[in-house]
Length: 269
Ligand SMILES: NC(=O)c1ccc[n+]([C@@H]2O[C@H](COP(=O)([O-])OP(=O)(O)OC[C@H]3O[C@@H](n4cnc5c(N)ncnc54)[C@H](O)[C@@H]3O)[C@@H](O)[C@H]2O)c1
Image (cartoon, rainbow, N blue to C red):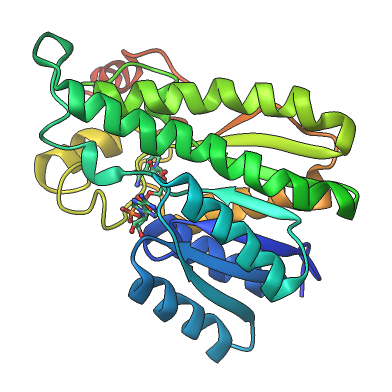
């Protein structure tokens, strides 16, 4: 048991990658976890794994792009465990941040609308639907998984980056609105994390080497790196932290853009 003992948590996008590891981490810290994902089979497998390890979890299928299914998700969480204390808004339409998310001059309007409908409106809708169940429990913690791409420009995926920037600003609005109810809202901006969404692209081949050079830790992130930070923000250990963006990125966004090149020059490479 740990810092989330007795907490009732909903983790979205928990069928894969960061969400799956975060759900298991929350359960290992004592939370009862709703493993929520579009991919019900994947969510069931993660929940089964948690239960096999002695944790408490149920799987719920839902679609972040469908406000009715978000309402059903939160109702299911309350039916299963009696309330909601923690919401990890981790789900995103990561599949849209690929080849179709082209430079703005060529922008695909349908892709932009879909990215914002799912990532931004979906995240907002999860907050809106969860807060009424958090407030009667005396408060809660909402953690939004944003991205470094929401804080700095990148090559490629402008719609994804803009949607993540919107989630970062939404985080502050939620912190303001729900602070008086003792509901905190923070965001995490991950660096490059090796997951099914990145393992064959950004974290593969020559791209991997370029990315590793830009992380001051000289390694890419793991889902556990994000899960630990999320557990901290979900717990009372962070009870005076709200409206913040925590970069969990091995220093990716903490340095001047030329640092990696200068370090190589100074090392004689
Ligand atoms: N991996 C990285 O390097 C990285 C970096 C920055 C931010 N992020 C963010 O972290 C989060 C998790 O990313 P990941 O790398 O683990 O991705 P992933 O693709 O491995 O997992 C995403 C999960 O979300 C689910 N999902 C997709 N659309 C959904 C929908 N409409 N409704 C419900 N669930 C849906 C998928 O089924 C999947 O299980 C995302 O918000 C992503 O933008 C990831």
